[in-house]
Image: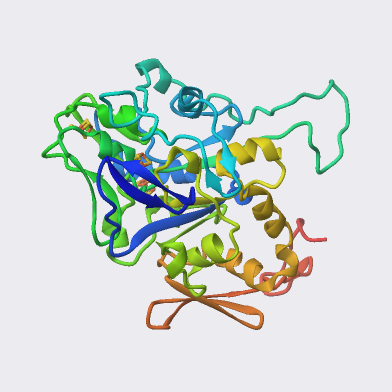
Length: 376
Ligand code: SF4
Ligand code: SF4
Ligand code: F3S
């Protein structure tokens, strides 16, 4: 085991390979508060990459309703239980990561879901935590009943457990963009990767005898375009880009700004130790204890910052840039009431107003000589 630094848990940790960060790291921010669970992302991925034989059960992108939704079944609870207590000392994680908690002779603390665990992709959908008596009224915002939608793809982790656990070295992290891929020519179906990934984002294909996973739509990324599940997102919750380490953070980089500068977007289960590169703006109506376990100790500050976004033109403006273009936006800036997405040389790729103009049509449309009944 090598010693590497994991900035998300603010300490060095053990990992199977030495630290070897890519030239730049693909990353994403998902705003949970905007997700409507329409599953358009799921279908955009499914129809692009996993419509073949042996791939029927694969959902490289899935959206589940927390707290009860999960695909595969109990992907999170299974590992949380095995890992035991996860304690933080301020920002520093003082418990064990899944690499440090690996049983003797194994590289990762993991578990392999059974076939039936993949049989219920919509389990828990729209189920609330808490309950109200029939006919009871509740006030908004409410604390007793809650759920939120969690859209999930592979996190293209800095320290991937799938990569660490493959005894054949069939999984690699691309040096140019940090995207994690399975080499289909090398893979022999040992399935240690499906056991090792705590997010359960590697899927075994019984027909080819190899494992497959989200490829971050690298053919699109290579052309400066956002992946399919991003470009097709109805709720405009997703932003793809590049993340720096905290000491190299650049405020003009949208992902750096949200993750490092404003600290409003957080990694899922940072205590697992993988330094995942998909970040979530946490839901503002879920209990703090639940969110703390899922997103770590920064969650209360993140929710506070997000709640104040209406009085924060930079943050509100940048959130408005999500879903505004298919292009990846490595830079951004605000000029008055306009937010601009830029390429690395400063060329404008997208331009969004702080406030959308509102047009109210009269009931009578003189051009077509019709009365529109849906107008006041
Ligand atoms: Fe590997 Fe899982 Fe991390 Fe994706 S989320 S890179 S499959 S460990
Ligand atoms: Fe699928 Fe591409 Fe989204 Fe990955 S990034 S889940 S491959 S659409
Ligand atoms: Fe390795 Fe997973 Fe294939 S463990 S051999 S990449 S099934």
